Image 1 (tube, rainbow, N blue to C red):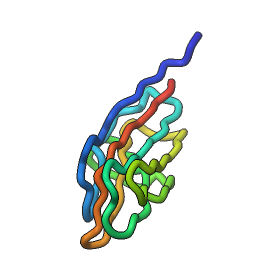
Image 2: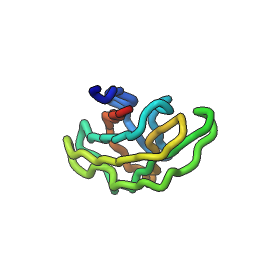
Image 3: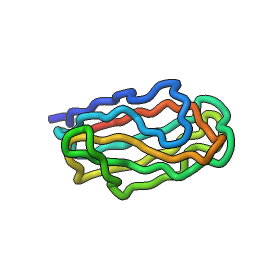
Length: 111
């Protein structure tokens, strides 16, 4: 039997500044998840760390522990891999004042 998988776009052409996060994605059926974060334009200012957040209800969030460096150049890609998570997932970060990045965020899930 082939494993079930899906790719979902959860942020497209979004300009992230300050405290930023992707839309939540319900992924409780999946065994593993990989997030890809791509800079669609040249980022402005320092590129912060990003992290994955988990939630029991899609409204209240906590850091899962996986961190990555946000892309620092146009078309650069960051990734985060997860297993053993609950039902809701999202990507979050915090930019310094004046810094920003326009992102494309996808999540790739496998059953």
